[in-house]
Image (cartoon, rainbow over the protein chains, first blue to last red):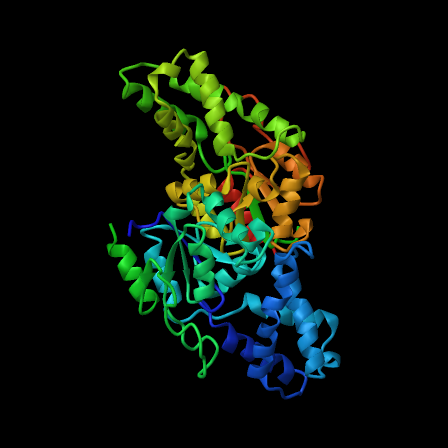
Length: 238
Length: 238
């Protein structure tokens, strides 16, 4: 391995704990209305809309629209399923959809990014919009060199254009960029385009019964125990 | 004035001293070849190519290409004028063109940005590419929430799309965003689109005989003595 000039990061799951963060905010929103809710189930159902909501854009049947809007559309679906649409005004639903800007980092994320920033350019390569990721990064104390990802490509991972546009925006060939993620599918898409790949597991992203992405399922450039381990490996690399 | 949610900054001139930084690097490049040069004149002639080089893109007669490439093209023009093309290999010319990634900040820039970051989202809205501005920001110790500007709009200031794409990428209406620049023309373009505007002069950007942009020439939201003054005004605003 030659140390990459830039590291681009998946965010949801890899750096932040979306599931408990969304459940916490959903529970608070329902409690404010005097209602109870299976908040974790709500979070899981909301996240279950995530991939399907991007598919029409990946396939070209819908023009690019930022994830913020998809989150709001998906929230409407989930509220319907929970028979809870009438609990919230349109304005309250827009605020709840922005819960994705207030996801808490995993405890090791901010420190590892700070350390990695000493050895490489760092940018998120997320499906989140620039607005979402900028605000999330403030909330989580993540510091980047720039914000890349879906919005600069007007498409969604794992569409190749997102990875390639991110490399191009850094002025770097793919082999000088490493995609870092706890999701094997994200790394498979990046590796196919010539990017380096860095994996470490987040075995509780989907809760205590998570069945997938518990280990590397590809020939990734780095397979680390955790984010701190990945940081140590990259810091020592020539 | 209601304090803007985000501040977007011009960079060349407003935050960094491109003229002496380029002259210094040009002098060093020529010295390394045992040649002498009017380095300040070279810097001025290079910068004189800047606006004309973007015009075909603004007018739509040329597809968007990042400023890095325009800088390289302009360098070729200036080297020809100086009868110095043969002094440098193609690779050396590419490295010299990247002198724009190594512009020194004005002495007050980094501290003011650090302070302003406590009260607003901050992003550059420059004609520089994401790659250029990210590296320049490392060199100058500028810390942003994201990098906006020409590359996300695939056009160049003062084309309206650059300001509007930057506001949209922040998820904010123009009236909640302030364009900050030492150039009246930049602010005029932003004001026409409904952005707030913040001006302070950089009377030595073009050297000791600068004749323009010495004072505000518009009804800007803030007219400050200098960047520290602008920071103080914004920090006190409700």
